Length: 421
Ligand SMILES: [Fe+2]
Image (cartoon, rainbow, N blue to C red; front, side, top):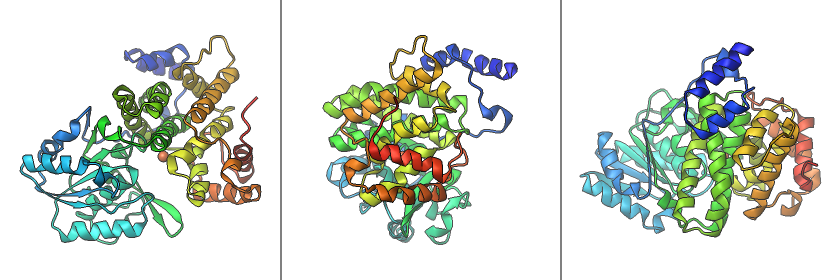
């Protein structure tokens, strides 16, 4: 055990990162990855910065594609960003067409429609410019151009045989992190399913914070809390490594410092920049660490009550942090510190509680409800939710086993809105 601890310290000692130094000072952390192989998947390039959208043509040209399909949605296509992408592609001498039909929570049928357009047009490159849904469909379009067959064949873990055609994803919200992940989520029947494959990680994540400046306040709040959930949940996961932990912890720091600012002052470029960076960092973290109970809870009640994904994740987050308090107080202490809480000489439990209260305050400050009661969910429905949660999203990487009984208790607290003592 001592050797393991020393190993972690050595790793940390090599870094100048502030958050990693924080880890050093509290480093009784033992990472399960030391005993097994860990894989960290990345895009080939992350191009980050204000107005980087203007160089998307040049970036696409480096990937050797000539005829590009731009996947986007009806809302984004009215903001002028698609025109900027087209102009940049034209300047780089590339041909492009637009598919702008992708709405929120896309169904598999939407993916099939995009695939038909992509296959019939002879395209050899894909750009996804939009929120998580758009990027998810762009990923499917890219793999469909190198892998035969129907979209349903790609669902599940590692079902995509070949890498897709070159793909650039440019997010217009600071939330999902889909621009760097190995996941594409599609609604099939009444259930959200995922394509989970290293072959759909975009070649380039082009992250321009200016694309998020026009987001309405509720989108800013929900997206920011989605990213915060990615960061915190991946830190709880048994699959996490120090590499991903460092990214997640710094994402927590940025979101806690800047989400309120962006919520109240949407035009604040500094806040938008740090939130975009945080969303990408949290995406990298959960791409490796995977998510735990928070997203399971959110996916259960969110779609049924028309609560947007990020909002439902933000509502669930403080309650699942309570759930993991007994097994992850060390991580919750780091989260408290990253959120600016003074944990001084507190016990691990007291420090962990500070993290939970800090997240509750942040959720309240961006005007997202903290109870299911408030959004009209009847208490009688909770056992059904708990059962569906454990059945559909079992999370083998959860550090505390998910049982119907224990998850029901989480739902009961979320229903009432009651915080920890
Ligand atoms: Fe999410």
